[in-house]
Amino acid sequence: MKYFGSVVDFTQARNADIMRVFRQKIAEVDVIRMPEICRAIAEAPSSRFWVSEQRAANVIAAMEAGRPMPLMTASKRDMFMEIYRRYKLLRPKHPNMSLIALATMIVHQPAPKFYFTPRTIEEFICRIRNGYYDRK
Image (tube, rainbow, N blue to C red; front, side, top):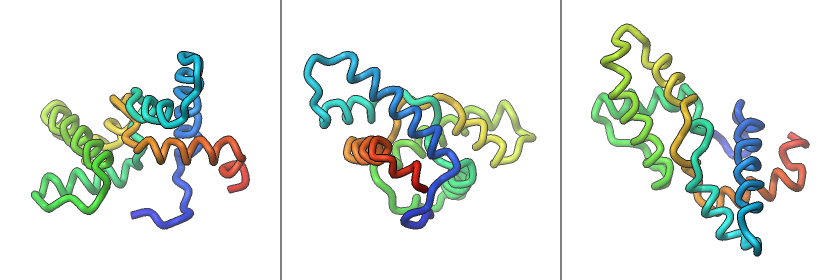
């Protein structure tokens, strides 16, 4: 669990990925409507899963043990279900690899979408554009 105000190691890469897709979506439309743009970004493919390797490994371990998943948004739950699906495919192919090594492999694979809400995407874009992350 992260704490309010904490900054993850991949913040710059995540922000660059969001802004890359933001620029693509802006170029595709005649009229910019931020709610629609943010919804399109949230559903667009991402360069990786935006979760730490350790967090992914912890959730995979909990799922393997049959423990209930912790409270999380529907989009995060969907993300972890996709990560777990990929884990179940990789585990037989690499039986000697550790859970953390498999989780690392998976989170660095391209993701089918960003797994953020449109509102979160909008918040990231506002913070990126106003220099919030530059001050951190």
